[in-house]
Length: 430
Image (cartoon, rainbow, N blue to C red; front, side, top):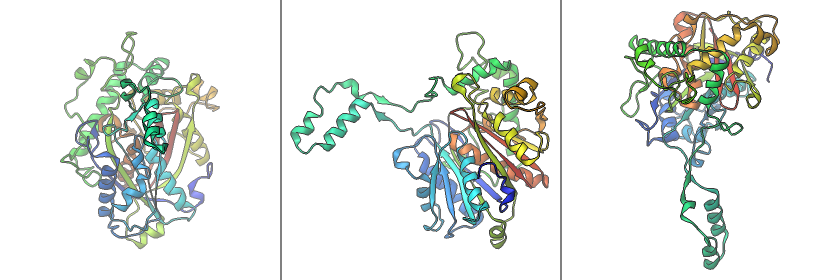
């Protein structure tokens, strides 16, 4: 269905979402894991919409960092959520775009009439990470398991050395380049001349907007308490530019030109989120208000191995989607741009304003143009809330859907960059 706007099929209604507070690595959720966070989140969604015992068409969840025991997180979490056990479940993964992708998966099934309602979401933990033995010891253990006699089992460990007990942890670097996402973003910041001051200002703004949203009760029905936490514990209500300016570069520590710090980059975070989507007929039959519609979506990739910015794929996906829908970049009331790093957002905005980039890379006749910063992430975003990789997309969709309802209508552009040089974008309308 790539390339076909969803509006040509059945409308896909977003009925709302819920999440647990996002928490920094090794804090409140250190011993919970993906399944526990997913069950709490899906259970809260079931409670919110009165779905106890109901059979939905599909639950699509995702996780980036997970154990082999989480092999089908969507199904296992659904079985413990209060939904009918006849509800199928699937687990997906596209790095930071995972839960937006899971929502798109549900939406596409609704749009073509395969299902009437479903849940899309995701969970991620960087506290409960899979730790495995090295290849040498794994090979010995497999040989011992295959052995038929005790003698052969013992023989599998001939020449064993204690260094083989050294564990392997999940990598944080891009396999193709060996560089972390932060190092790649540092390269982008230098390429696009993004200053440290502008990054710190963006980060501070995200915190202040999220604080204000919590204070006015915006998240009262979007965030459910868990493990004694009721707000994202990365949120800093007392942040100031002066405090942010004292932090040292986190990725480029030697050149003297590093601008990305712990404050203007998202921290490693644990959390989960989920959204309920349905056909108009199902929503009406079950007396659920439609907050907005998911009109279209797009994915794209860039050749980051050979010089393109790792996190620049949304700059490619957005104009493709806009063209298909006959829209301009300015035809939106709000923009939800995932803040993996402040520099990444600023690079994206600058690229869309660049005549050279839009012509040579995007093949456009003119720049996409400027976005009013006041319309971007009006309730804060990842720099303040944190970023559990597979949970961010559903957080954004639920937040944007409620914002559109409160505004009485409008259109939202969602843009999420991902590891692997990819981007996932979407349009919400009310």
